Image (cartoon, rainbow, N blue to C red; front, side):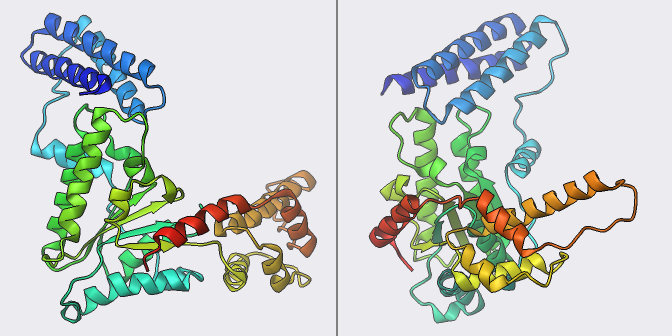
Length: 378
């Protein structure tokens, strides 16, 4: 066992002892145990300053220090650490977003190759499972530059197949309680499987999945156990002998940091690229339809000018122009009057493009192309 693992196990022992003694009303001894747990967790943070688990440790430190202050002040001892089925469900509800976003398949501009891959692996099997005797892919990875629609794709497909939607970001999986992270993963998959047992599809969407299953040089015990639990749960989902309608969709801007053990579990690996000319043109039409646009604005020319920009970059261009025009209105008139915003001109767009460069560099695009060539699976 590594030094970090030993320290984490020791901290967990002191913390668990403290919680048990706290529940028994033995405040003095509980305080001592909490303080020892705090010392070890802070030592872990100082020894491994780059470890992603440090956020969890520091959160624990704050929780334990607060409890020590409460106990020293002889305040009533609430059941802060008592686990019940009710508060387990409540914690899970706080961990995930289960309300399905109102995004339709038709709302997705471009990305035809990605759409086709999703239809083949998710939409068709849900509609006609009898046509897939060998099963279908259930682990799907969206990768590509930020702001190009990875999250939007996951939300749209959930709407298209009327799936239960569990949206979490990987950082939230790492629980505030030491040793609970792997339990969070197990409980997440348990609930998603239960939701799919009645024949309805279920989707677990994990944004920034690289923060959970990426390669780490300074891993501590909690991270290792959580990754192993996730690997175990993924294996149970993609088992071809089962006819589960449960899908795990991961999204990442940094696919090259993913552990190869997890790459294999994502049977479909789909590049979500920067929008091409036609997709950019549709975006300009979409964002401009409710704005006062001058007749001199040439959307075709703008779509050409926006080469290399992501979808979110284009949206930000519109937003920056809108803010500028609103500022001009406030500077030139009383805000409580009925003065309308002036029309957006071609010069406004040209000025905005001069001031706002693409958020994705050409060097970064080469990384995506290289990884795509090595690991693509459509």
